[in-house]
Structure formats: structure tokens, C-alpha cells
Image (tube, rainbow, N blue to C red; front, side, top):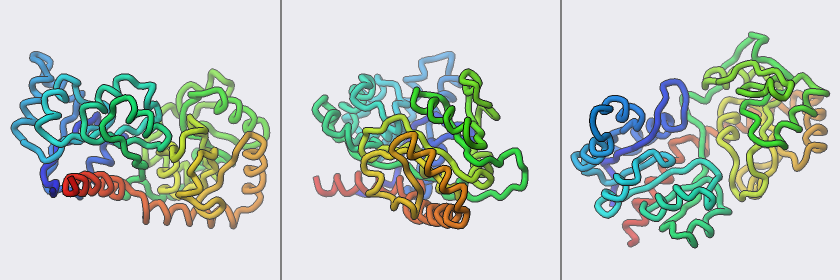
Length: 318
């Protein structure tokens, strides 16, 4: 089975968002792609049942595949199309078995692509038809090195994100006491940390990666095999030196001290910050290696090719 005609559903934003990056890669991979922007459909068809509008657009297109980002499709529509068309969801978040809505959706679609390996067995046991591991990536056009001499973006250590969990807050507070730290993202003022910008767009992200000596990663989970936030690929794709927390399986993708660096606890993180601030040449070489690695092996073109090829090959084998 060759997939030539695809409908892609998601929530797209003009300036940012993984949906947009996946859409661009899908358009390069498949001959015909129709994108249904869920919020826009709701807005334009407020006077009628937007679910019927989505269903009719899918039926009219008669696609080889309906690809959905996260859960960006009404469940009633998914129920009606799942027996008629090949359906797949790409779910980027690490919630997995705790997300009851995802389990309901996963029981209907033919393929559920998730970003960690730990949840595969649990999801299968709860009725998800076909959970598959698939990493995220960087965008080959957007996530690039953008040089800047503006000191606004420069720092010894930079963190881009929000204070979602306690370990992230305590780590950044400890770093702030010892080093030149800049935090980018909402809500940091609540923890006595400077919030330089509540939302960071791709070009700004790239400038931070260029100007900051160390980009800090502190993902939501320390226990999910194969999971690391998309910040990992984006930072490498923008040429940043990434120091991130260790998650199981990280060493199967990257080489420590070659593509990036990782830590296991706060003490080790502080020691590595101290080391790499003093060893500029090695830090820059690792950043360069990481940049080349990301753009060679894990852009969204690679992500989309992996998804489409898996579906095509699975269908042929079946």
C-alpha cells in the first residue's frame, strides 16, 4: 500500500508548533495533503455542527490515511471513519496510560505513535490496538543556527520552558545562586527567578541557543525509556550545547560528551556546568557535533518518513 492522499488534523499556529513542522514534512513525503485546522474549523463553522463539517471533508477527500496530531479530532468523527480509512495518531506527550481519552482514541485508530517505550505494554493491555514508539525531531528549515551579537540573548546557562515540576524549580534555583542564569518562559517570577519572555518563538529559541553557553534540559520524567522532550532535538538543531537530565535509553540515541551532555542529579548537573563553562573549545565542538547529528538523523522529515513507511509496510505485510 502506497500512501498518496492524506488528511492531517491538528492545531496549527503561524509562528510556532510541532503541528506545522509535521505538516511541512508530510507535504514533502506524500503527494496530496489536506490539512484540517481544528480551531479554525470550529471558528468558521460556529453556526453549524463543526463535527459534521469535518466528517464531510474527510469523506469527500477519501484519503489513504487520516493522520491526527495528539487528540485533535472529535471522538464521534473518529468513530465513524475508523472502520472506513486507515487512521493514525502521533501523540507527543508522556501521559500514556493515565490519559483515559487517549486510550479511547487509541482503541479506535490503527496506529498510535508515542514518544516513549515504557508505556507500549500498558497501552496495549488497556485496549490500544497498535502502540508504536516514535521520537520527535527538529525542523530542517526553522531550527538552524542564527548568530546574534545582542547581549539580550546571552547567558552562562539558559532554560527555556515552564516550572512544571518541583525538581525543575529546585534545580534552577540552585543554578541561579552560582551562575549567570536566564529563564525563558512563563511563571518563573513566582519562584524568584527572572522571566525574560513568557513565550519564545523559533527564531528567538535559535538566538538563545547561539548566545547562551549552556542550554539546560530538565524533562518531566526521569523514568520513561526513550522519552525526552522535543527541546532536545530543537536545541541540537539550533546549534546549542545541551546539558539535560538522563532518561533510560538516552545513550542508545546519543553519545555522551559527543552530541550532548547529561546528568543524573543536581550535584552532577552543577559540576558539569562548572566544567563546561571552563572548557569552551570542547563545549563548542559538542554543540557542532549535536547540530550535525540532529539535521542528519532526526528532522521532521525523518519522523514523517518513519510514520508513513511503517504504515505502508505494515499494510503490505498484512
